[in-house]
Image 1: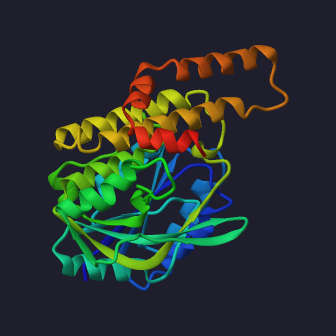
Image 2: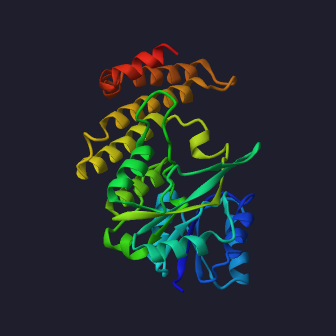
Image 3: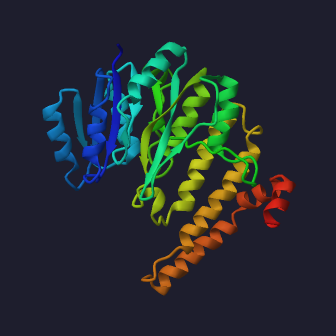
Length: 322
């Protein structure tokens, strides 16, 4: 059986880390390499990693200065010895048969990537998030139409769309494929770096296989970068959007995905404005004025105006009549 390398980028997660590591070590697939990258955590995360490494020789620990999740994952890719690559986030956990099942399907498929379903875990419990794909595999065009398109954004402003989270932790990759295309995470991104990587990989692959089981537990952490106030959110979102546009243009899909890109941009603006207006009661008048300046910057954005002009008229009509 081939070795599977599982890369875990770690920063300040001592509360959740033991459960994450134990779920990986409990895999029914024994031929795994667990690469724990401590990204300069100020808490006890490194000590936890080192303790588990003493108990299980399959664990490798790398301690580095804080440079962000993209840099941490890239270090893991650089040292991984496995023929297959998986990713787990340190505040999440996985079901015991995850990698045995995904490896079996991917190794038999002839494709380069396998995707599985996941649970969204929060204080209300676990909610399964299922791919609305009946087939066990998708060819390149089906990947574009059924997976990438729904990761980029909705195609209709009415609630009749399928959203697919573009996260690397739901995927298993052949390492030869990652090496052939020199796939790496974009340094400098504070949000959605895994979406950019996933779209880039899916655009390069010849097809994907689907594991219809629900293996991964995604913990909705209210303290994560996506769920806390970010004064740079608009700039960060625009940077991600530009990278996605570039990837699609290079693949000859810019025009094909234009409506989804426009609706994505509009949705980004709503999120960024909410980020600025959902303020703390303790903020000073100066801080509030700065937030309002950022709101004005967002709604004055020329790209946003162009997107609003281009989206299908029926969508705007339906939206404003809700």
